[in-house]
Length: 359
Image (cartoon, helix red, strand yellow):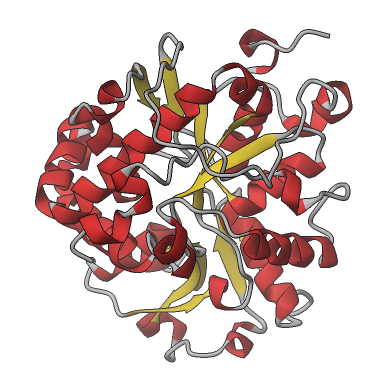
């Protein structure tokens, strides 16, 4: 059975899990990092699928594209497309409908459990960005402990946020005491207008809400449920056919992240120029990127090995949590869903990332 872009573009992974399980093979997670060789990425018009609409969390890609860092590596990136959630982008990567996709570690595992094989080739956020947050005035108290959520309804969007919030409630034995309601992607405004009293989202949502004269309190889901935030995924078949394209994309993105980290205002100018609708929320996007670059880009693994590094222990812990609480359709070997093979640690902006950035 041939797997093509057209075959599955608009179809969910769940419905096709049994049909597509054999279309892709898993990666060798134990392969060593790539060397800094000259690249020849023979791909016409590769695209990046975001997990959602462009915002401050996506600065490195826009910086790399506008500054010509992908082109410098010989990769033609034809465009950056908005997505429909981390679950959607992981599915499209697994279906070979997107050369590169921004998703999350929990959704890479989840979609693999459904029969597809998206592969993480690099980690953007070295910890989960998911938070549960409240407007103190409407909630009636400062939110400092998950036990305060008992009896509440949490409004959440789909994908990574909902999955990790459900795991967080399971971890704290609150699943029977807290209801999660589908609030779409507009949880911030629903919280501020009183439509919901508690919201689940990412730290960028807290930035947005705080800038609207609200006192926002939040609980970090990642403190109790270990997981990576944004990761770059593709399909194993793409990697097998285009290894230099994967290396080129990671090199370009790493350089974009470094440049944007060192020139925050310039980076936001690039983002807003590419997506003019963000002009009114420029300062929100700046704050979001500033938090990402200072608190999420670097970890002990990055300090030791380089930008984008996957730590197998994190993948194993995330898989254990998702399996324990019944969030995976079938058993998944966490060592088979990621690889560091395409991270060129001899490339300055990967191997020496913390030395070439101000942070």
